[in-house]
Amino acid sequence: MERVTAESGACRVMTSSTAIERLRIEPRPEFADILRDEPFASGDRGGRAERINRAFDRLVVQSGTRLSGPVVLRLCLLVALASGGSVFVLTENLLATGLTAGASALVPVLELAVRRARRRAKLSEQLPALVEQMLRTARAGRDWQASLEQVALRTAAPLGDELRLALGRTHLGLSLGDALGELPERTGLPAMHVLVAAIRLAERRGGDLADCLEDLAKSVRQRAREVRQSREATALEWASGVLVFLLQALVVWLFVVADPQQVSRMVASRASLALAAAAGTILIAGWYCLLRFSAARRGA
Image (cartoon, rainbow, N blue to C red; front, side, top):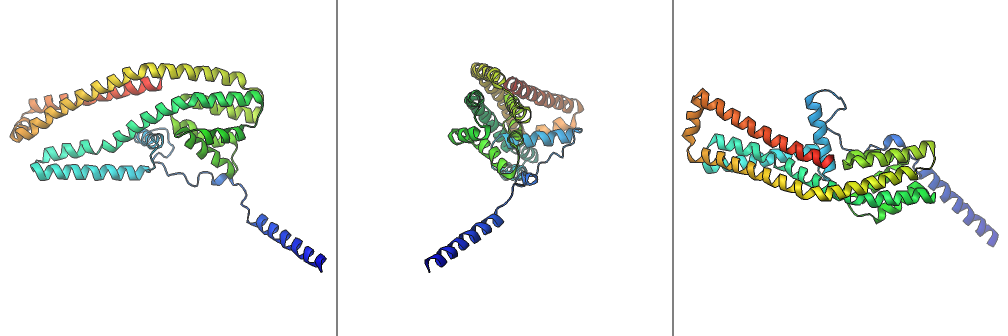
């Protein structure tokens, strides 16, 4: 009787294990991008609109926001409508309403730009520790993926979140190098390109990459020191540029609100209209050059 009970229990165990095997999901690399948000950029290299879409996609991803691109655009529209409507109710001035709506529509985009700058600074501070850990892994000959999983659990956000997100794609069947392939685009750090390329090279061809990682660690540490030294100068440049822009915008605002008829008289004169257009163009070009210069200094 006991033998029959044991055999029936063994049959139940085998049946349950067989059911588990049937329910197990095999890794499918083609499903690795199933949860990725649809970007605005289509992948075409040409065209100014395509470059703008690609830049906007990078801004949304690298800012670390949980909002998707379409949601950000809807938020810009809502902020513009709310601000422009409030100004129209208070002043009943169409020109002031248009200027306010156009300026306020950029507020969510500027917020994302500020968040991306702060996130890049935090990632730059965390990257040297990651490279040092990878260097110790290369010297000890341990498994790359297991070591990275341990590092990801100990690393704080935002680098820890990016590592855990990338390593989660390995459970879908991707190799470690392919799973980490989006880190350079998501973080915006040039040094991340070198790190991912080194991991891919180690997977495909093998060999000792300790020397390469050691050079990368020195470069990252040097870069971190340079970033800390130039951060105060960059912040001062941004503060002065924002102050000049706000003062000029305030002058235009007071000019429109104080004497709305002056605007109609200026529009009636071609010389005044051309002068105002030239001044606005110079203002926008100067502000754009300042932003590009600051971005180039941070990304250099």
